Image (cartoon, rainbow, N blue to C red; front, side, top):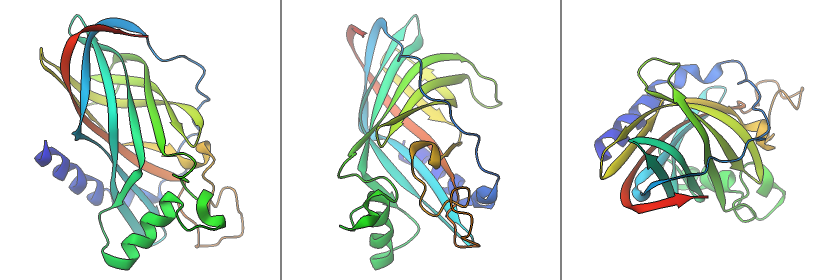
Length: 228
């Protein structure tokens, strides 16, 4: 798993040239409830569960990880039919800097400045966790994946619908999930700091609205149960 995650970091770094794409399409409000189903419960192992992230501003791209602190997937007839991940927003880490500047960026993303900047990004004091809940899973519509996962992503108390291309492998003892890199528009979750689509006079001092994400997680089987 570590080898896969290291490869993912390289993938995210080499895709920095895409950071100037047009703003990602706005996400719809989450109006569908998370899937509920009976089956075998697979529990996410936190040491094997990460979200890789990439964000940019003119001339600079940063990338790092966020921990998935807990989660479960429900499997029926060899297929994932429900599940959720709890995201530890306090675990945001930058991987391309060191020392003081690394600490400053991580602190700004977490909102730990102790001033009006707390809500610039994720304000982890007020919103320490995020949540992803599966709504449905259908056959893939993109190449190199086997599933299209519709889910509700909740950040800063705001829930939006996202569709994620993923490879999901199910065995008797394990479920492995690796998504393609997908894009969210941070302003959909009320994160408008230096958004040129909100503040029109920023010139080249803006921060791109697009955040590129990739989920990688392993879950191990428990006894038959239900998720309601």
